[in-house]
Image (cartoon, rainbow, N blue to C red; front, side):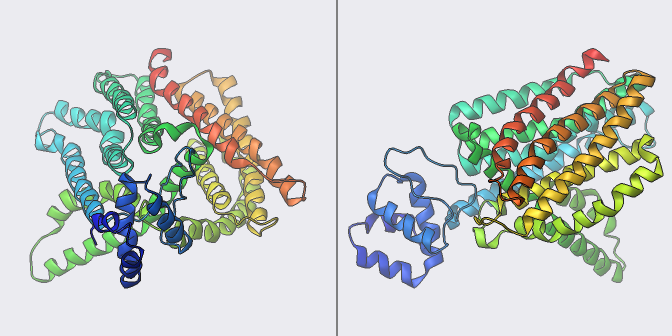
Length: 441
């Protein structure tokens, strides 16, 4: 259905009603495209309210004189969806070529000079976050159409970060300086995701609703990327087995090109799908409600054993614990974002328990790492771990009391506003690691 039909028949309600009854979903897709460019039409505002009530749209109609709210998921027209998919495929191809550039230049051959292999390692150390998230940033800009000012600001930040990484000296590094370089690689994704929020939200990037909506978009995209990754791995294995059965070696081509394309493509495709799924079809809330109680049970059993083991001095243990804390934070935010608007809900116990145990584990790890810092002096890795544990401890501490007060019936738990404001702190910390650590160490 062509969106222009809807605009042409605004003065003919019976015709619009017939088009809607013939194919409600096609009507909703065409309406979404018309709404993007003609939201001020009074007739479209009526249909917007009706389609939203029917569950075919997720956006709210714009009240007269009100500021537009950010819509992170809504039905798109077939033409626009195909256009975005074409962009996604092209961007994934560019990302794969960026990833394969050292090999295309002959730097990865084990028969070549060692300097070439080092150049290949340094290439990925510089640019891995960029070729992984480059398709995501461009798709966000194409999908949500930010203002020219937002695009220029985001582009300038990405160009500056890219220049810093491109000209960062990596040859003949000491162990400490090499650690700083890897810390930059680990913290750059946070900065690039923050840039993505500016591209997606535009002028709404300061609002609590906009920031929480962006977190929901990222969570839903990541949740959809997981099944895509599993299905892709199964299909790749089956394809290799089919060719092996007729004595054709396919693993070389699959491993060299198809696997990198799949790994680099699951996140942008996941985000593209997430931005078009209605609320009733979202996967992330289901993941949070299934794995939230499971994570609570694991933490309840794991925390005492962690204390008794005395392994908190081990670097791998601390790394695993920090990854678990990030996962717990994501689960709690998803549980809170999708909580029904009722006085009490069973997920309140899950969220409060997860935050409490995670805060206790984080403070314990922080005490151990701070002790090592006092005894052995400052190193980049120790300072980064201490900083991260301190940041996430403050985040959990700001959530735990409101969650328990809500369980006790003493008010609501406005953790969304706290989290939305605290995202700026994570961005500032990541920028400090990327920009200041090279000068400090």
